Amino acid sequence: MRRIICEYLSLACVLVVLIHGGEAHHHLKPKIKIERVTDAYGLSEGPHWDSDAQKLYFVDIYNQYVRRLDPATGVVTSTYIDHGPVSVVVPVHDSPNKLVVGSGKDVILVNWNSDANQKVTPYNVLSNLTSGDVRTNDGKADSAGRLWIGTMANEINGQIALDKGSLYRLDDTLKPKTEITPVSISNGLAWNIEDNTFYYIDSSTREIAAYDFDPNSGTISNKRIVLNLNHTKLEGVPDGMTIDTDGNLWVALFGGHGLIKVDPHKHKVLEKIELPARDVSSVAFGGPLLDILYVTTSGHGLTAEERKKTPYAGSVFAIHNLGVHGILANTFLFNKVDESLDEEKIIEEKDM
Image (cartoon, rainbow, N blue to C red; front, top):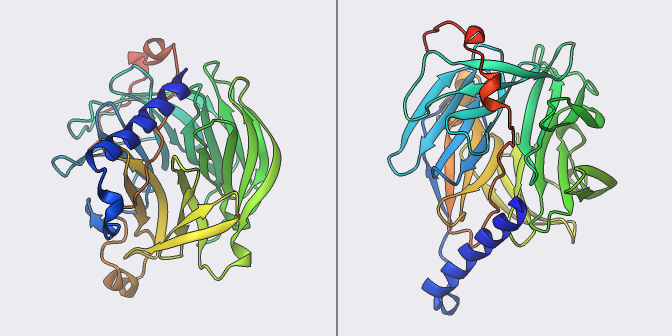
C-alpha cells in the first residue's frame, strides 16, 4: 500500500506539470541550473527528502552529525551523534522527531527536534550489525518500511580493505538479515516505481547491479549488471544513487567530478553533469514536485591545494530543470519506537 501511494503521488506530480506547463513542449528545455544550498562540511552523504516536512536530511559522516536543510529558508540545523561515524538517516514512519541512523557498527534510534540545533542527542542502539574494523555505510528503507543498510571496512591511511562488508535487511524484529556478502564498499540503493527491481552498488567493483525484488518478502534474486564503469571512460567510482519515474538511475561519481544519468535497460549512460567538487557522494530527488535533484559532496581528506581549487567541496547542491521526477522516499516502519527510547540510556550532553 505504501508503494502504491508513492506511485500515485509521483504520477500526480507529473500531471501537475502537464496541467500547469502544458505548452512547455513547444519551447526548448530550460537550461539546467546548479545551486549550492549549504555551506561546505566534511563528507556530506545520505540525502533523504522528508516529503511531509518538505526538508532534506543528510549526514556528515566523520564529523558525526545528522543535518537538516530547510530549502524555504536555507537554514541548516544539526545534531551530534556520539556513537561513531554517521552514515544513514531515515525518518521513522508516523513518529515525529524519531530517526533511524547508521552510526559506527550499529543502527540506532535518535530523538531530535530538527527545527533547532541540539547538543543532547537521545539515542538507543536498535541493532548491532557486525563486528570487526568496519562501519555502516549507505542505506534506505524499502516500500514495506524495512531498512537496507550496508557496511564497509574503516579507512586506514587512505586505504579500505576489500570484502569486509555486507548488505543487511532490518525489519521490525530488529534482527539483521544478510542479503549480499562479501562486499567492499556497500553504497547506492534504489527501487523502481513498479517495485519489482532493486538496484545496488558495491563501489569497488565500479558496477551497478540489478536484482529481482519481491516487495512482500523483501527477498532479492537474479543478479545482473546493468552498467560497468570499467567499460567507459568515466572517472571515479559509483557511489550513492536514486531513480526517477522513467526508470533511469542518477548516480554520484566519487572521484568523478559529477554524476551520471543511466538507462539500466539499455546499459547506457545518457548524460553526465559536472559539479564543482571532485568527490560526489550521493543524490536524492526532493521539492514539492520531486523534480529537484539534491546532491551531496565530500571535502574530507582534501589537501590545501585541492581545497583551494574546490572551496565548495562538502556542500549540498540542488539541480533544477532536469525535466524528470523522483519517487517518494520510504520511511522506516517500527512499531516499538516509544519503548526503545529508554530515558536511562540517553547520552550525556555534548557540545556541538
